[in-house]
Image 1 (cartoon, rainbow, N blue to C red):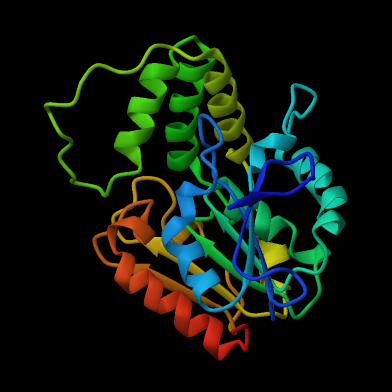
Image 2 (image 1 turned 90 degrees about the vertical axis):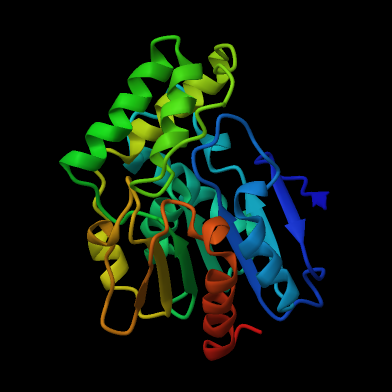
Length: 257
């Protein structure tokens, strides 16, 4: 793993730019702190293994207190896209998935999109759950916010480990990131940007997700939405083999390998 010189923390995997046949840019979900790309490891391993150059970025690294909306956040990211060079595959998970879809009008028409639990729109139930986490984080309870988030990303009906220890102490920086990221997702609708995109798109969601579900997705007739049975918000960890196969097939069919 190496780091780019761009201000946004990034991890680069796979062949060098000159040798790689395609470049994948991966946008991270809301994380309490930058995890060096661990959130998407099962997928990035497939991408790099297929010969793509993979750049994984901390989506929230461009957020600050001056950003008050998802629209403003998208505009800030739009100005940075050119720093990464041509992008053949735009990927995103959760908040990163929403942002990737919002940026589709700003990439080449042939650019492919790969999304995992990335909402194109929200509804009242999703927004209430996101707001509950955000309010805890903003109120000095990032420990409880993270515990609630951990429960929400599990599949519906999953019984948490009752032997788990007490939440970690409150982390103000983590709380700010959680609150900002969760609130930015509320009220989004990038359906038009998605359905107008002429390039290929694969969206993967879990059938038992407590947050982003199939009803939060958007797709044109030539796009694909795949629902993983029994999975929650992290199907790439819960059903790694199935998701990896889907991604591999998508890359091959779209000529990205």
